[in-house]
Length: 366
Ligand SMILES: C[S@@+](CC[C@H](N)C(=O)[O-])C[C@H]1O[C@@H](n2cnc3c(N)ncnc32)[C@H](O)[C@@H]1O
Image (cartoon, rainbow, N blue to C red; front, side, top):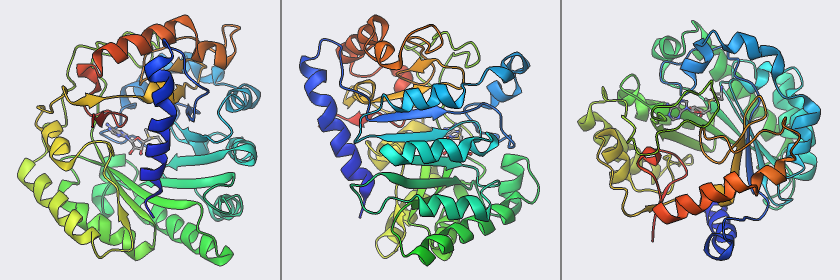
């Protein structure tokens, strides 16, 4: 079953009432992405955060990551039917990660996205034990592991020799651990960003996903937030600038690879999910040619979803801060605060901004 379609349908339905009548207000968030840390043990060449990871100013902030207590209180603001997404940086670099996953999974659903290198057997056992019993129960709903390419190409992209073998072995164990418990959850996904480095290997990666026995293969369209200082976190985003895609991608190979994956998916036990999920394949290709049409696109995300930075800023989108939980404000007060409402109303008026091209939250307006 494609849970993501169901989930996206629920999200859109949840957003629509306040979107139309809410004057900028929204219900509690259904999805909270928590960027737990901007530390990372990889240096993926396409990473949205690479500049941030390499920014010497980050050193000054290293000791300031949100505490487990601050994170728990943000988790409490998420709808009981919602999902807490742990990301980063590399989430497993936080020593309290499993405590946070346990906390989120007791009262809500959780999802963790990782590069997989620190996903040892003990963590896999615990993640599967915490796996949701069914679609409607709390627990770990999904684990997404980034695997960018096959063998040496992967190691070159992430700049860590030997990492491919280690990650594959870790995912194999996770799949085995879940099977041992006879569970369907967490759903296990293999993810990669489509770039010039791996575009010729996508079908091979898909086959590897089948061989390992994961549930989902998720190629993601490359996205880069334009003209933004991710370290600054002050919200200086150039909304009018169309982001330039990974221009080195051979479009013919991309088209061929996508068609081949689509064909292959018809008889595969592993679901193919291309991100952004709300747009078609032709739009994905157009993105790589920097010519995606925006006039038929829409975004409901700020009515359902927020991002919490490692230092407490609340973002409705990528890098636009509407306040910080460290400024004496509760998360929910920021979520429906003046700056957030103003942002929602502005977005509603525009439908999407040029800067949104490629963002995984946009969808085609039907
Ligand atoms: C930034 S990573 C952080 C979590 C973890 N360290 C990992 O490697 O998955 C979160 C997600 O962003 C995706 N990502 C990284 N750079 C991207 C880019 N330029 N465009 C689109 N997605 C990207 C990764 O594939 C991953 O699924």
